[in-house]
Structures are given as structure tokens and as C-alpha cells.
Length: 197
Image 1 (cartoon, one colour):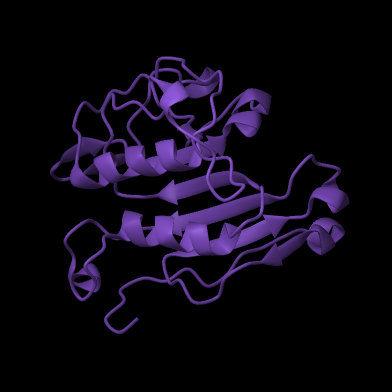
Image 2: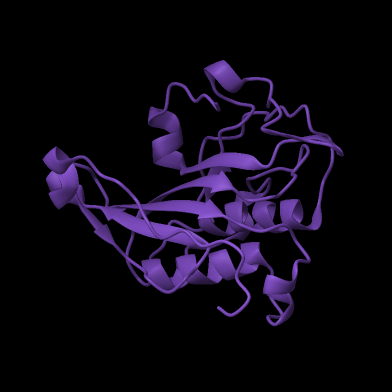
């Protein structure tokens, strides 16, 4: 993409497990999509790992597009997953501020499964998410929409070390929670702890 300020191009995997990973996309500049093979790791489903850095909303990189970084990420995720039933783990700096927005559907009976994906299926992650950051940005609203569309959940503010939804960014203009760990329901249930350094 012309004018891109930052791209993610490298990832490292231990030699002992490298056969269990494969890269799923090579064209999206703001994220790396990897697949963890279910047979190699003895999992119920393949897992899509998304490592991302999204530039702040409104920067010139996205002006040529009518979509934001979050919307482009969601579109890429749909393209990568296709009709496959895969779990999802997303982590990185999304420059999104979600405040206390819900990342699940309150009235799930109104929604259906789409394209064999784990989208909009009822789950048990109706746990209050805390956040020291009360601000809700445009990206935050879009991230909340991504979560409900793909039935994934923000771990920040819910799990052990980060039960309070600590700030992940400090700048001259203030603090914010902009770095996230987001998991499919089954992965959320199996995660005991997270920590942001």
C-alpha cells in the first residue's frame, strides 16, 4: 500500500513447532495471519493467529480507502477464514478505545451462524469487562462490532493479572487501553491469565 508508515513483515516460531504453523496472508500490511494446525497441536479446530498494529484512525494511510484499519482487518479475516470453522486469537495495538462496550450479543437468540464460521453463536462469556479507560473511540465501536461478528472476546479487564483493564499506552496527551488480546470463546475458557508488559 503506497504511503504505508508501518508494516508487519516478520514473525518467529520455535524450530521445534514450526511445522504446525503456516502463514495465511501475505498482502495485508498491518497484520500477520498464521494458522495453528489442529492436527499438529492436537486441537479441536485450526486457530487463526492475528498479530496486528493498526495506525490511528484518520491517518492518511486509510484515506485512500473508504474503510478504516479495523474494517480492513475484519474484511481480511473473513477472506482468510473463508468457509472454514476456525478459532481466532487476535493480539496487538489496534489503537481502539472500547471503554465498557459489550463484546457479545445480549439477545443471542436473534442471530444465526453464517458461512460455517463461529459467528453469532451463543456462548458463556457474559462476564463484565472492566476498563480504566472510559473513552470510546470510532475504532473502539468498530472493534466491538468485530467481536460480536466473529464471536470473539476481549480478555483485557477479565482475566487474572489484568482484571482491572489496565492502561496499555501512555503518551504526552494521556493514557489509554489500545492493545488487546481477543479470543474465540473456547480459547477464552481455556485461558487462565494474561499480562501486558
